Image (cartoon, rainbow, N blue to C red; front, side, top):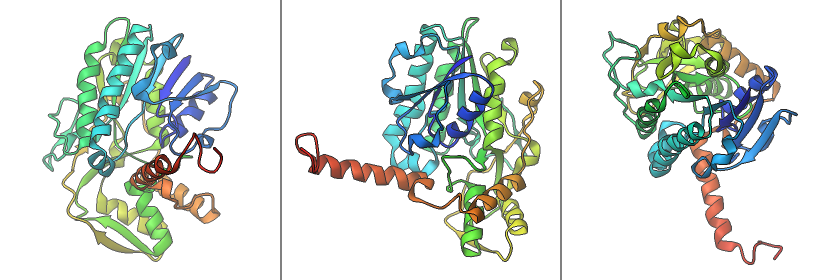
Length: 338
């Protein structure tokens, strides 16, 4: 298949694209590549397209069979600070992409959304795809708006699917250490202290980055009659934890660690069901311990280090600062060379 992936240079994209190539697909990888193009290794079936999702030309979808629309301003702190851009990218640009793809004859469109749109739920409730949502952040609200505007585009010629991803973890070429399991593992390894957001009783569904990529690939060929216009939670029952349970798993794998509480209480708490996607034959393969162990291995080998670009918000703010500085000092098309 010819597949176009937006946000291809991000945390999930840099795991997904190699998996698609390995399966023999041809991939158009669309991104601004804020985190570096080198995160995607060159391949004869890979085309790199430097473009902003807000400006994609319809012609880019010519001869494309499917779109996986990963592009997003990611994580909640970034969404609050870059609020306007989050609505533009996470909502408006993806609606624009879906409409353009449909117009150009693309047959299948996959929207990776987020289970965080469930927000705070009753502690005894296990949320399924019919549960009333309760988005608490700009990031979650923008994702739900995208869902609401894209699903009605589904028809017999355009299969649109929404995947509400659990909180993602695990190693990826564009690494993020600002996600729960990843950050806990790094903090425990580096300092002997485990940073834990108060009060630890929040429920949070998790999914390994390769498992959520597998779900997206699964939906490329899933029976259209069963998935068209549908929403699916992505994760697994064994990967739904209280935050303090994750901390205990990290402590079991990383020796000599003590808990270190921080921040105000996180009011997002949601337990999620995955029977709908599992009924189609998809099943997540990884558990939290797998992610903790692989990150620890990468840290100990020196392959993974904490750098500015492993913390999404820090990197967004840094490159924004660079841009402001460069615009101020640039003259005649250059800085030193003019």
